[in-house]
Length: 163
View 1 (cartoon, rainbow, N blue to C red):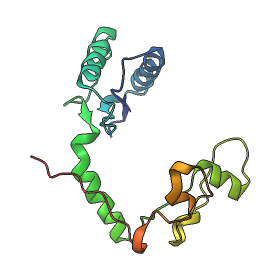
View 2 (cartoon, one colour; view 1 turned 90 degrees about the vertical axis):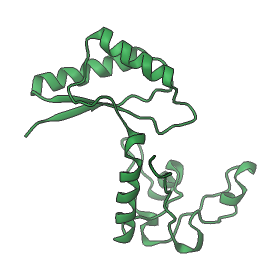
View 3 (cartoon, rainbow, N blue to C red; view 1 turned 135 degrees about the horizontal axis):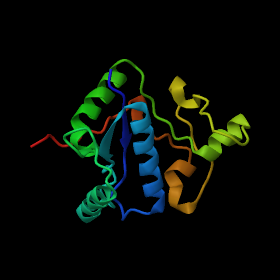
View 4 (cartoon, rainbow, N blue to C red; view 1 turned 180 degrees about the vertical axis):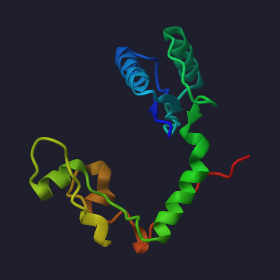
């Protein structure tokens, strides 16, 4: 079995020192464990991702000598949209998908958790979609307590068909 890890930057800006530290950590762990490194571009934020940032990222990786082992590289989240939609449909068909409007603040209020990692309490899993307390003028629908799930059905996002 081949061990594999990944470095998954989002091309929404140029690399900074934090990226470099993370890259060195990923490549170091991979080499110590005899694993491969996959470069996966997190390009799901279509508003902010830019081709020039991705090009600069690839140039910087090459300059640093951090060449991914898995080919083809890089792979992109966007390349797998159809597969993700299929998997979401499958989960939905098995009744494993539910809507949730819970903010971190709402979960904290409801559970009384403090400090450490926040753990979701599955509040919305029963099919009752949580409603948010009044938040702001700009959030009238949520502030009015209207569930995010219309008609009790989840409507999955369908990406455009591949060309």
